[in-house]
Image (cartoon, rainbow, N blue to C red; front, side, top):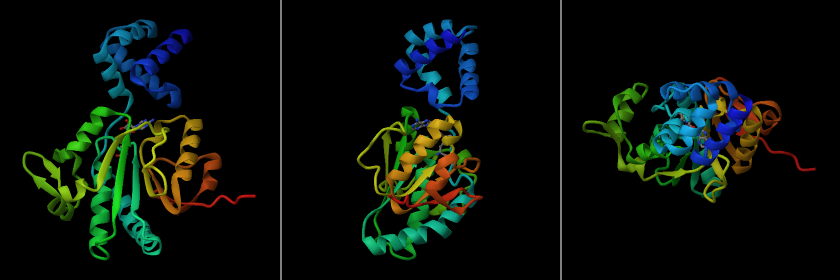
Length: 272
Ligand SMILES: C[S@@+](CC[C@H](N)C(=O)[O-])C[C@H]1O[C@@H](n2cnc3c(N)ncnc32)[C@H](O)[C@@H]1O
């Protein structure tokens, strides 16, 4: 049984480029079981053999393993706090250094989070210094989600937390709600595993890393949080999901800005 599961994991890595060992074991097995039931097989070995050959099944399993749900202004209060606590600091940072403000949405799924922060920043800066340049980079491992993100048109089920002002100002409504070009041109999407290097992802001012960490194994969580710390500018911020938190040594990498909304600022590590 264990050997069979190890073999299945190997096929998953080879065929869909997803690394099962980075994720929490029990939920991972639950999701694989969903696909096994669908394919009417009882053993990991049988399922591995299907997966090895069937490209559609590879795609379905990838979809099942990467949970891609998102929405605009998800946990509205978090974005209210970002506006209150983070954006004024980013503006000060720009005034001091004059460098483009860079935001990374790591694990951005279908793009709602990237566009939300774009709208929030646009509105905030419009009332203060509209000429401040900023860019938002959204990354994810799921191609299908990124295709949706690129198009930027959504049904209203992902807009129920969006305030009227934003709906009116930043969307064009046809059959769906499409994000306006003003915001779309600030956002770039890249297919990227969170662990991969990318030249764009350094000197960041703000990282939104929400509802991704929760699925990861503790050792991988620590590794990624350290990596994010290294990619942030000195005076920069990290936002986690509502039920996520820093663990172990990673607590010493960040200061708490708002514990309820999981907003942190980078802490300098003293070099000896
Ligand atoms: C639940 S969604 C979170 C979406 C958004 N951040 C939010 O909070 O609404 C989790 C996303 O993380 C992505 N993900 C999981 N593991 C990843 C990895 N190793 N590298 C990049 N993205 C990953 C999944 O593909 C999925 O789209």
